[in-house]
Image (cartoon, rainbow, N blue to C red; front, side, top):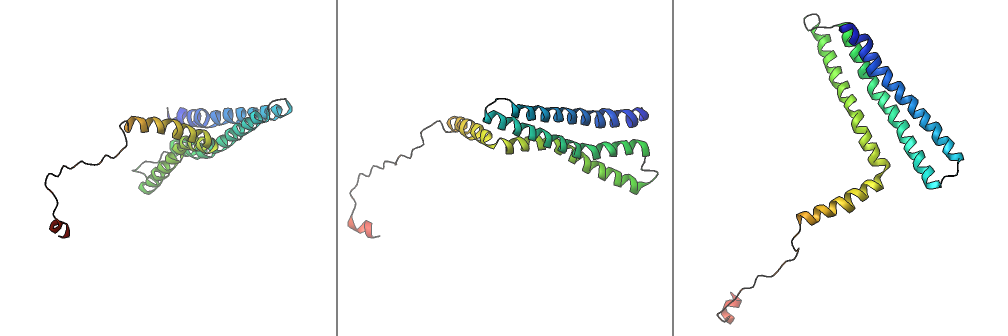
Length: 165
């Protein structure tokens, strides 16, 4: 099992294969967008296609940068087989680096969200503010938003002495 994990699973299935497929498909999409420029398509559509292709290329670069260190570390972990009983300091360092790179690997998913929000900020703003916020406001504040004065019925006449005090 250790040989399969260290020589097949992490290097091929987690590391090399996804990176190769994603890089190949992003390059093919880039070539497709370059061909779209020559066709007669509206300028607005061409700009959106170029923007989307740029996002895909940046996404692939970020994917490789954030995935490769974790994959290399996992391969090293299974090949080196450092145990707490053999070298406690090296084991602690390996766990620390593994935790840091695991966090960096999870940033891979957050980057997609933030990149989408930055690239399509007008659409996100329209969807969140114009539609969701209005619905939330109507749902939360369904009553009238008015202030009515309290009516105090004073039955006795006001004396001039009370006003001065």
